[in-house]
Image (cartoon, rainbow, N blue to C red):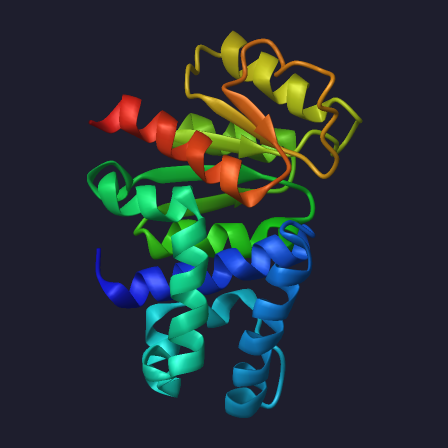
Length: 209
């Protein structure tokens, strides 16, 4: 995998961890350093769309020793990011449908996926998701749980199966009850970036390799 996309993915992954409050003080300090670099380049904190190869190249952040060091540190502690290099054949060109009524909640995670040359389509409701599935084939579907109703994710899963869609569904939720099992028929459920990537990679390896 080219270095630039991985640097961009690492930056977005770090931002996702910070937003989800994963990793504690060490992650927050690392992201503060990255924010400082973007403040110098843009006069503002980074936004999800900033974490792409073209932006890093344009601002020369790909050659900034602080950014590069932070990105490499993220990759070194993330088994999922390191795995992306090994399974890139399964990721390249994969299609993802992400269902969430508040897309901003997963903007950084989506940016990580797109840096691995995956197409990510959005749907903000169950009906929109079902319509997209009728017209496009997806390799994996990611969904929140509560939208129109508290169990909207389960409703989507049931209706997909009733329609004959066997695409694996992974739930990405705001709050995870570790005492409850993965919903029947779903591939996995998580509220953190690292296991989310592993679930996606698991599905794609089985489906596309």
